[in-house]
Image (cartoon, rainbow, N blue to C red):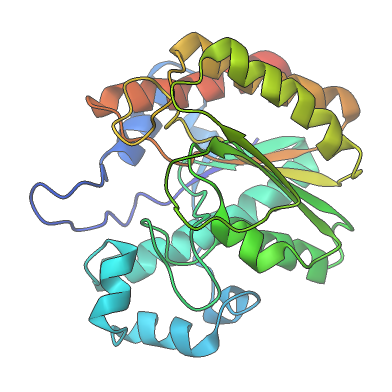
Length: 299
């Protein structure tokens, strides 16, 4: 088994910044402490090259970000201050998505303890997303002939507008998104399948919507599913606006893993959003995703 982590490069953030950057290291520590992953299964995420990122993103945008010359307005839209560490961390997030997707093809299940940067578009980023990890991984796998069809299942509470804008015209990729109808981003792009959910959606409503979504992904006959397992639908999440419980989110993960495991379709995960107060709630929900994976895949 192989799972990847990019938290070697911590993002330096100003005091009282809204983004909970410490959640990634906390997750890795919790997974080892609770014996859900063995330490020898964990690998530092490799750094994606500008050429790999350029499979889906504008070359000038990439160069400006790497050089620290991106206009302040664009950095403000992303939500992070620029730094050399941020460049390395971003490369690791993209590289980890590629590596975990390849590993999933070999082992049936893999993932990165970060990722799901689904708000990144062709020539700009936003919502804490700079480059789009699942879009790059999808096109990389297709370009190398490792797969013929990729499905993205995005269960973050925020619509994957970047996934939709970058991939909606690619017949070899199917993008499905379950998300808060009235939540960020306020301009939504049309995915292959969008399932908007009302504010305060509960476990029962959510799981019913998911049960109707999974067969539509399966009908695409993907060779791999890239699973954005955001936990910002949790009731305690300050950006979520849904009322999902820990139990409901874990049941969500069990449904996803069980469904595609029965079909023999590999899954590669990115953990997606999580902004609970306290952040330990988000970390616990991420841990539950790995509990569900372990129960289904018996690793």
